[in-house]
View 1 (cartoon, rainbow, N blue to C red):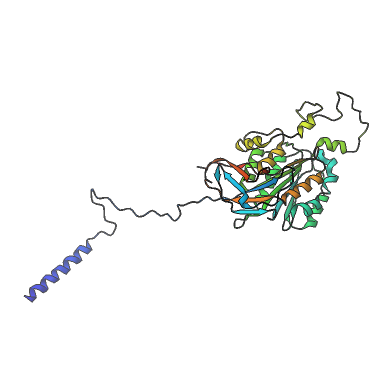
View 2: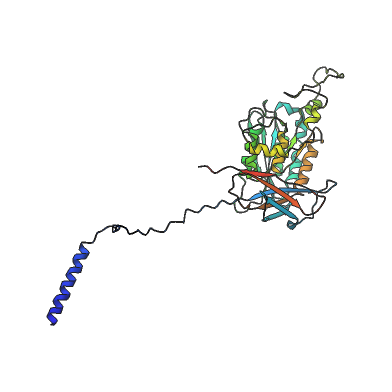
Amino acid sequence: MLANAAVFLLMLAFACLAANAQAPAGPIAPQSGVSVQQAPPDTRTKLKVHVALVNTPVTVRDAKGEMVLNLDATDFLVTDNGVPQKIGHFDLGGDSLSLVILVETSPRVAPMFPALRKTGILFTQTVLGPGGEAAVVGFNDSIDKLLDFTTNSDAIENTMADLQQGTSGSKLYDAMSAGVEMLTSRLQPLNDNRRRVLLVLSEATDVGSTSKLGEVLRQAQLDNITIYSVGLSTTRAELQAEPKGTRIPSTPGTFPLPPQPGVPQTPTSEAQRYGNIDLLPLAVWIVQHVEHQVKAHALGVAATATGGAHFSTFRDGSIEKAIDEIGGELHSQYSISYTPAGMDQPGYHEIKVEVDRPGLKVRARPGYYLAPPET
């Protein structure tokens, strides 16, 4: 009996070995009508999160035009495309500054060089503030980096004092594009509270640029760069220049200076050129339609689109006064940052900043444009 049991167990062992020897080496083929369980998807590299920080400078003035300096973050309501946003960073004039000074050096503004050469100390003493850095770029037919970013006040002042006249031409938009690119390089991914400002001293004329103003402003908005501008008036420069030869006296109905290109010369043409107009709709439009051109008020449009301000030396006084006012505003200005909801929505995002106190005038950047993702 025991012998029969042993024989049976021995035969069973041989049968199992044979079955294992005939088992396929690869995966078992699915049976007909039976679904195959799939491996769980690999989600480790599939998820992409697009996060951006939007910073807007906010200038608040009372009915007399004086800066209002006693507001808190709770006094502000910020919306992005109508959606209220949570303020992540709030500061009053204290964040460090990265500044690009962009100055035209063409012969057209040569009579204003003595005033321009005196502005270095204003930038170091009035505009930059503690921890501020500046770079200087000159432009005419070419774009010339005269000084890279530095905190050395002497280097900044000496560079401005040594400005030299360049060739004819004014590639304003190309120069602005170069300035925006330089400021973009100062982005700090882990702590991006540094303010980035492009300050342009130039005529509002562009000749020969390959860059378009709308493209420059789109990039400036996305990189939280504020543009301020001081308009240099050719008419004023010619009036300040030393007389060359005999000047023909003006008589009623005649003009001693040549007209602006393409503009009929009238007694009010210069006043209209520097007059007060609402540039906000044009600023929003040119950012949305970058393929089009701006034929007038380019510097004012650039400032309006980014939350800065434009100062005309023809109407508003000297270059020194304009720079002094810019410095005063920068150090009395609120800086508000937020991470917007719905950031992936392509198209124009409208920013609105409101204060819950009556009688105050608020100025901020109007928005930014997100291009559709590339396919």
